[in-house]
Amino acid sequence: MNLNKMVANYLRQTEELFGDELYLDSKLESTSKSENPGDELEKFHQEIKDCQKCSLGATRNKFVFGVGDPNANLMLVGEAPGAEEDRLGEPFVGRAGKLLDKILAAISRSRNKDVYICNVLKCRPPNNRDPLAQEVVECEPYLLKQIRIMQPKLLVALGRVAGKTLLKLEAPLKDMRGKLHDYYGTPLIVTYHPAALLRNAGLKPAAWEDFKWIRSILDN
Ligand code: URA
Image (cartoon, rainbow, N blue to C red; front, side):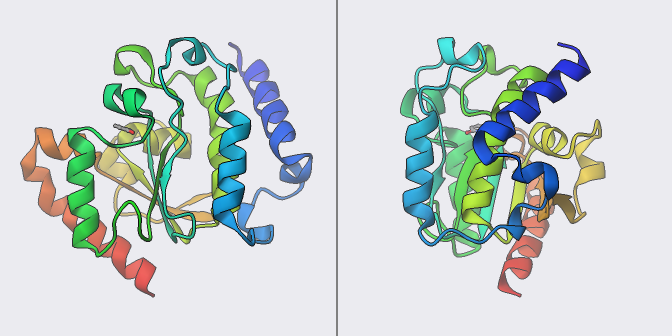
């Protein structure tokens, strides 16, 4: 798909979800916070759960909307569901998810308390390949709407693919880590994907530094 077509698709998608508001002000936080984010998120989930905007709609088992505390000030964002997530309909439930739960416990949070977890793509790419640009164009507005409903204080992208997809840059993880980025007005940190920590335990001390920083931002 060429760039013009992708931009046109993106604008069509955001217009469907937000009207023309987003063109006037790209800062999601500038809209007033929902009175009841839990109800609003669930309503939105029901609206989009049968999505067929890209070809992943035909191959998924479950649409993986997101899980957690709708009032959380921390939102974790992975790249896309894997096999277990596709089977169960919940993000980060495989081995990497179990490690993520331990990391969250270390900052006194859990997937039911003070954290919301979701992915850029809501459906599993076959064989866990990276998201395609067109899939991101169709799906990222769903994430934007989740953020707009919840208005978290901080977004954390888990892994290089989630980071580069959200920040629209081609960079190694080491260049994205340790910086406070901006994602449509919400601060964003990029850290290791828990699967990378399973593959290389030597990365865990650096990941822990990131999560201590995350905790300090949330506590201030
Ligand atoms: N990896 C991700 O990026 N997301 C998941 O939900 C699971 C594994």
